Image (cartoon, rainbow, N blue to C red; front, side, top):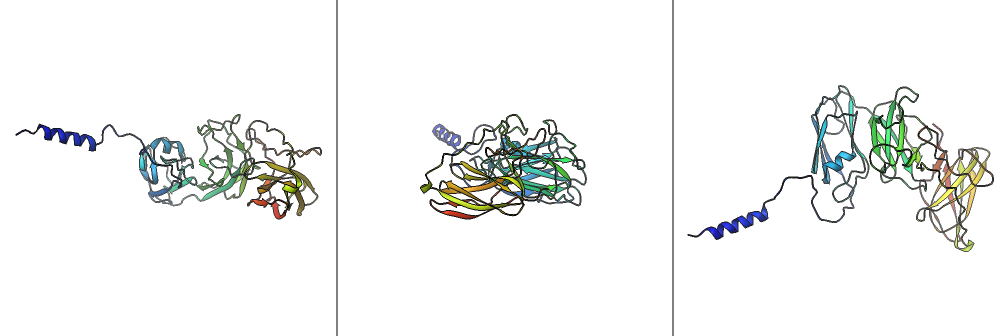
Length: 369
């Protein structure tokens, strides 16, 4: 009885159905880009657990995650080196190889830049916390970062350095690692959760090469108004600036009056020279006027000859004033620290229509911390 043809057929079928090669950290191939945000669908042990000494943390995701992508976006506080990441699928595991400190809150942050194999990123940074003691830290610090053209700035890196006392005690240098790291979401907001109570210095910058180090000579940054902030602070506002001197603002070429509109509004909470800006949400072009307020009471302003469209309005207090031209906004400095000019941004865009005057623009400078 001849069985060779049958054996050959079975061998051919097995070659087709059995996987070949070694297992690799490789995403499934094919498929369109995923427009839904990546989600963390489960964590073990449960978030907020206390009195535990886990040997590993397991995450489950809504999309395939590579180990390399997870490693680049993950940070643990307090910092530790004795751990490994095992992933390459819809699940990932962080295994600890050194004892955890007693009575300490640990946070694991997955930055928003973490993306699935089809390019879908987290909607916001994901923070997971647990405590080896009976109490978990509850400190919070939150704020929002804008671009120079008043748009929400996403994927901006925010470092938090805990300080000893109320004076700066830790320099911002590449060798001095931050206590906490996160990134802004699609709306430009950030919020640290479960951090130790105390005083912090924040470093806000665009990590363009993703090396988790601030290059103050090349990367955009936001100095903010205060060098130090306390836990519990919320509503902090930052605006990005370039490390190189920005060109002076140039006067916009006026459009024909019959094809433009006007806006009226008021600014309050500050005195002296106030610069009001109107930035077009599509063209990103900004129009500015300077007004003078004698008291913090609402000061009226009017902006004419604005091309139709939607605008984000803002105002700032220039540190230096020149009566011959509108003084530019000063973004300050991080190293050494110098505060940025005070500014405020409207929460909603205003529509300008041809031949119409739009009102109800209200800008109020917050109280200084």
